[in-house]
Every structure is written in structure tokens, then in C-alpha cells.
Length: 128
Image (cartoon, rainbow, N blue to C red; front, side, top):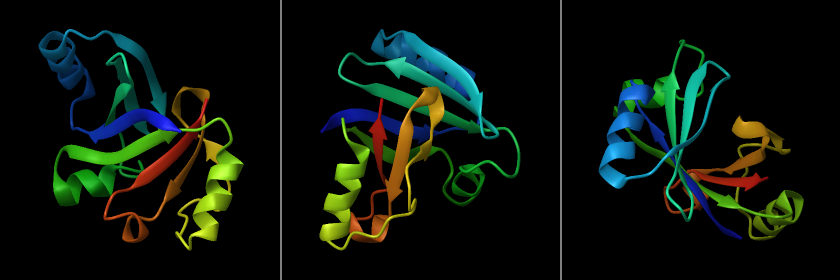
């Protein structure tokens, strides 16, 4: 496993992408609209910043933004075998948010672990 991305919730993905692109001298690698969110990936070289802007009230990050404001939402780790990673989490008694891997942004398979069992951090496994 290795670091894949940090998911950052914002109320303006385009403006934040411009800021990070200039500040960090990193390119935008991918843009899409996914499940009611504008999603922008910035390539930092060793991983990505994934910017998530809710576009409607049903978006997965709308409540997070309303309650917490902009900021880091999750940390994602890439794995070649998401099922094996989930079995290891199960064996350790780590609660899953996703019972099965599901489609994520950029065509990846993803599954989230509950922050109560991961030191208060929402952890995402991602298989490219």
C-alpha cells in the first residue's frame, strides 16, 4: 500500500485548484463531476490532492462542509488488492463504512473505513 491522495472539501474547487496549482507548482491531472460533486485531482508527484466541492444537498461531502467548513476530509491509500485490504481490516476489527468496494471518482474502486477505529481519520482504500 502507498499514499494515493488527500481528499479536501471546499466550497469552490476551481478556485482552490488554481491556488494550489500556482502555490505548489503542480498540474491539474483530472476533473469530473461525480455523485453531485465537482472533483479535481492535482498531481503532487507522489500522490494527489483531491478537491471535492458539493454541487447539491445530496452530495457525500455536503454535511461535512456545513458542519466543519473546508478542510481535509479523508486520506486514501492505494492498494493492488482492495478485497485483501478489507479482509485485513476485518481481521483487526476495524469497522467498514462500505461493506463492498464501490465505484469512486476517476473510475477507481474504493472503500472507506470508519474513523472511530482509525484514530479519527476517515481512511479510504483505493484500487486503480
